[in-house]
Image 1 (cartoon, rainbow, N blue to C red):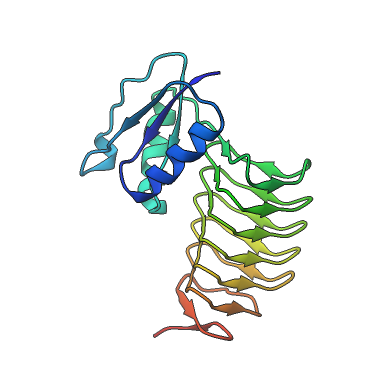
Image 2: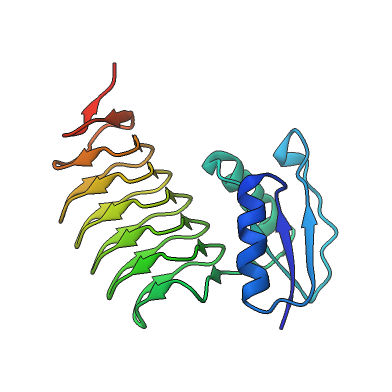
Length: 193
């Protein structure tokens, strides 16, 4: 098994470390990123892969591009305690936490976080650098573009689309398309002014 470098040192990184250990990585090294993420120059060996354990999507993207430019290879971590359909497509750098459920035909772009107990139903697509928070539900056929945050226990109903850059607040219900990159909260979810 490859050696793993976990980039990040906050609360999310501790959760990612637990997943890595449960997957049997024998060598795990943690790298704290600098104040300016674009300055990161990790010392990665040729047999090391990395995962970015940072919740902030903008920082995750800067780090991912920096590491890719250095020729580093992203790992995908899927907890053995998650239920993932055999035909689900999960991009490099994604982390799927314990209790997450990913159903048939679902797909995820690079460096997306599917947090504890989140549920993504059949034929849904989730873009790059998204964060699906604990307990969030994305119903069948939904389309979540890049850089979207779906808050804890929020629900996106069947076949609904959410535009890139949108933020869906905790426990919100998205029952119509989100077409503006803004903050949406409530039941039903409405744009905050």
